[in-house]
Length: 304
Length: 304
Image (tube, rainbow over all chains, first blue to last red):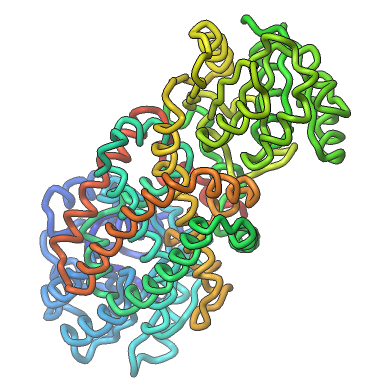
């Protein structure tokens, strides 16, 4: 491994998982961690999310040859400016944000002359904070790198190797393409989930108690996604606005088509639409991106 | 238990699970089963989904004091007419369909003078067919009864007891109210999931391979729901059209509001919307209706 010391800025689900994964998979690599919230720093020290938890970002990055920003997308600029003066020459600066075009621009502005390789490990759970991380979060998950212009292949290779050693599968693409792909595989699904859970909360004819009781019919899957961190998701929608709006307009047009089929009683159109969606599920399971067991292998007595 | 013999018409996920659950929880109760598909009957006999698999519906119901129709909602009328002449006087006829107003009307027309108590166990997985059922499917799940006018409390009580003995929690309400509740907790979530999976399949800028690779960002949860049985879901949307269209228009209005907030860069509106949806998730977990573990407790190496 060509990085001897990794600094993790932001010690929530992703930052904490990186720290724990490095400890498990790369025992020779040093880690320092920093979080703007003192309570998170205390908890991170208790859990050992990094070998040393620092009181400032500058202290955390001083010895690092890889710095990973694990803060909400909207906080990237400030986090980068805070550590800029303390960065070692030649250090690679990366992140884990869910949108990449905006992050690339913000980091380039804040850190002129530095090696910037934005990254997005497509992994996570609905939980957040310093207690949420675990060492295996990236196993068999994809991590997308979107190096900015001028970054050498050698540096991109080094970061690829790092993620591969944490168990991830690595892909390189442009930030623009990343943002379009993730709009459909992640951002629109989250927006839809937040919306339907909100719609259900507002009904007068159906009580919230009823919505909760009968959620096993499908709704409960949406509530898991809609329990994700609100600051993180606010920032994603603000920073990936164009791709999200583009994909949303296609989704809305498709939904309007199915609505029309229901209104017209067109059973054939509904059957055809509901049949072609099964193949994609099979492929996701074959690619190892989901659990094949019914209901994701939930326990029978779900959480009871 | 006041039913000595239960006939199950339709031996897919729900019918098969009822047969297995009766065998496990009510060993003194006799069961017969029938399915219109000979291949399903063969497999049902191999798995022991009922004590005796019959070649006709009439034969299956001849001795039954409880008959449960476990066929798609659109096939209820034909299934009821097929067995009408063979029904014992006083037998209770029920079902497991996901919409109830249409089913109540169709069964009342097909079986005049019989005791009809439509029912909906809110339980299931994305799998279907005679291999999908299991005895614990109804544990800690709600089952909603919607007795038609003229049914006695005593008969409703008997059916409640049956479902309680299979592990379910029972609620009684009107068919109209059921259809409204389930439109929001189940039917709209399925429609949305089918739509977004279809949208993702149609993109030109993003390949299907990319959609599959990066599905862990949220999309894969939707593909599970969109892998549900297409005939069953076609029939649900056709039979619960009014409530579905009503709830869909509210969802669309709410989605339009969030779209507007994204377009306007209104971070506060997004943050507020994303914050209030967390409470409902907590309640669902507290009520034992979902698994509290991150990602539903999926295995780390999901399905790999």
